[in-house]
Image (cartoon, rainbow, N blue to C red; front, side, top):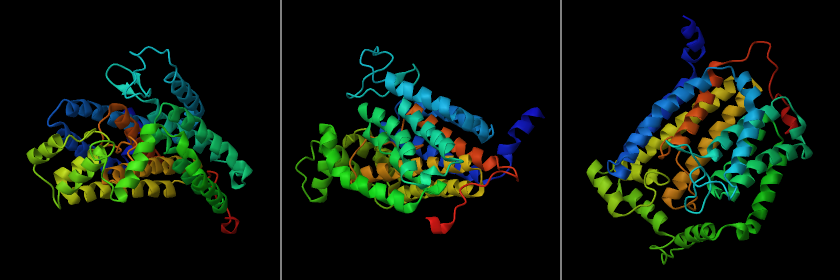
Length: 387
């Protein structure tokens, strides 16, 4: 009986359950796609090992009231920043902080390589939601400085790793949460415009391989295919396999052969969407995008129904993370965005990534299960004329 009372909030029907079901459907499709990408390799077994762990983490995060999660935001932010610094220390032993492809992003925990930047995305959402929940100073230009600094600190550390893809997520999340909290649109538009103007000035700061990927996308859009066996190989192969799937895809054996003989790099990871389209065609790609839309729509509905400012902002932040990753990853696979190493949420291979995504879904389920009391302080009620 005590267990039932504990579980009762998350067992009662709410929109968060639809979010969770859509997530599980994406995980199942992802596992099947990993099987095609690795041609029955051991990656499927490893991914399956993390599915029950991830679902257990989802339930664990959904159970406590979000007030308790709010209290943990600041300590978690401090711990996460310390971990982001530790992975960058040059003299850390390789068995603890391995270097892969010239990047230092992981802690080797034996059964899994843990990536602090995956945790940093979630903790940033919690910390920003805690900061914004009962303030109004962010409705002035000066008041936006503190939220910007809160985003730039983990962004800078992640860029040094280097991990441009993950670092790119923080600004869309920041602006979405500020918008949901009632920041004035003209102030946000001014900052976005300034950022777009300064983007060309950031180009010299990119690593050589990052510049090459940006140049590659531009060249391919202009019809220049000179580098198809070089920097263009991964993007070109991905788009070729997307087209090879046709309207309804190929048989499992045919799809696996296409992926193997075309030598698609990171087929089970960054390029999993190309594998999905090879196996299940355009129809499969549209079903996956539809499931993501269901996930995000129900998530935003949970945020709208929960008037607690912290819970509402956390859900908006989580949905924005998922939306940004999906747009960037699908854009990479379709050849319209540079390859940044961005994974497809809930579908790409990787234990720490899968656990992080389940944790985010758990936050949505939490907000759907725990409604504020009747006398709760109203959230973000500002006159429309002030916008």
